[in-house]
Image (cartoon, rainbow, N blue to C red; front, top):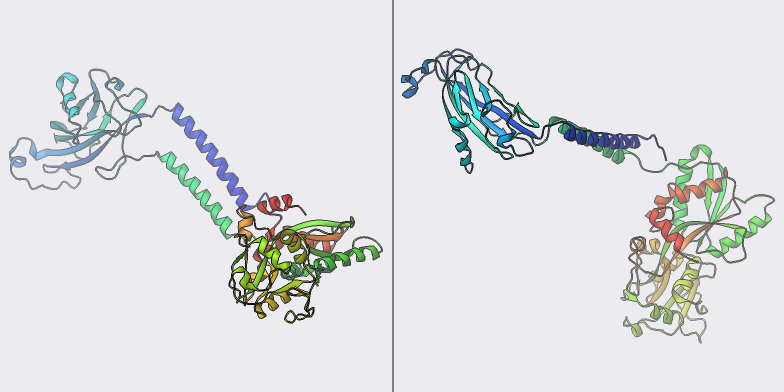
Amino acid sequence: MEWLSAENLVAVATAILGIVASAVMVWYERRVPRRKRIGYRVQLDTPIGDGQGPDSRTNRREGWFDTAAGMTHASMVLLRIENDGSQTIGRDDYQSPGNHGLTVEFGERTILGVSVTQPSGTSHLLEHFTRERGFGYQGGTLRLPRVPLNRGAYYKLLVLLSGGSVTDEIQLSGDLSDGEVHRNRSATPDEKSPLFSRASRLITIALTLCVVALAVIVVAQDDTPPPIGCEGGTLTVTGSTAFAPVLREVARKYERDCEDDDPDVEVDPHGSTAGIRDLAAAGAEAEHGSPPLLVLSDGPKPGGLPELRENRVAVSVFSLVVNEDVRLRNLSTTDVRRLYRGEIANWSELGGPDLAVHLVSRDANSGTRQVFQRRVLGRGEIAHSSVDCVHKDDPTAPVIRCELDSTEQVLATVAEIPGAIGYSEHGLAARAKGLHRLNLDGEPPSADAIEHGTSSYPYREIEYAYTYGQPPADSLASSFLTYLTRGNGQDVIRTHGHLPCWTPEGMELCARSTP
């Protein structure tokens, strides 16, 4: 793993920033007394008389505004006072001297009158606005009583003034126990104060940007694992014909990714058992070391070959396939065993069409056949009775059974002969035409279901790679094997319907599967 990659640095920075920000906010909330707050804002400050505005314009007045005394130099202010903290404010929380709680200063202007308004449902607040509780004004100073306010509660003051200028600053002051009085920055008249502080918003934005940056890096990066230790030379890969499509594609990718080292990987499969024999013979004839030969086998090697070194590559899923004319979609394991013992000669005996059964099998070198016999039949198949899979060469045989050299031949023959049944690696069977796959005991041949532990489908096996002893670390055999099992080969393995053993799920399946 590249520990200093961009995504790792962003991830670590995000984690550190989150931890530090959380610690700072906890400290801030515990150490800084800002839980009780009274906020205020000027929602209206407008001239009524002449020459009160910034542009000293003359206003047009009618009625009482024109005839009442002092209106020539009058202005009107609407002031909102609210509890924008996180706790309720009681009368005893006000710490101002005297019996009033807050003071409003209007600069050079003189107060002519005050009206208190409050939202519906909070009329009880008005009982506090009495002279006995400190409510009153003198000159340009307005004294407000100790009004208890629940969280989010507010009241408004409409103040008529004379003299001065609307540009004069309006200041509300007072002392709160474990709290503060401050001016709100809300832009609109009745907008609620911010739910989070500016510091909280900045931290949230910073963390969000870090997470987005990490996501962009992860999405944009090329997550294809690089080749692992390219080497040159010549290597022959043989064994399983069922796994051959994977090997051919991986060989092409390795040669392309490692073209600077000029490797030559030849894929020549002719059966798992034959490949094991070839490897044992080549190793015995080699003058020293491990020969440049890699064998893939559907299932484990036979006993008595301790010099062959085992590598688990993938979990392979196999399928029973039947000609498209055989309309059955599911067979029980019991019925499959009867078919391959020659006890069922016509598909009508299993509820299918009136077609003779043709058993299209692999030769004795086939790992696919050995897995089928071991995992499904529990015994060997009956003797073959046909060369062309159509005519019975042995008149005494209960059914027609033939043997072919490769998985591709089995699939082509099953698709061609009505009533034919055979077996194949799952990925190749899924792409074949003229036939369909069978469920076994109601379980479909699904690699995904097996990977997620939701299927007990029996026709599956570990794909093994064998070398003669331990090939040198700088050999093409060692490099290609690593590329196949832990490098780009894993993607190819999965594309062809197998489960790589080096994924978390694959490691568990490969570890607990027994030969």
